Length: 59
Image 1 (cartoon, rainbow, N blue to C red):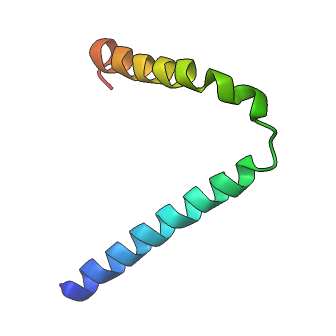
Image 2: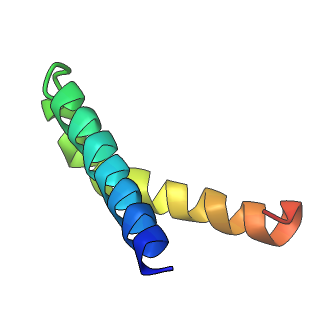
């Protein structure tokens, strides 16, 4: 049982670290300096879209 939990834990954490690393280093190739001043409205819009989806679409 503990071996199964350890394997699952290692696989999950390794996958998360790999995906986040790939996304982080992938974004370094894209120039996003102009986008930084719009970060607050973009995050608010994404939260609003998720909220609307949960209320009206049953996400």
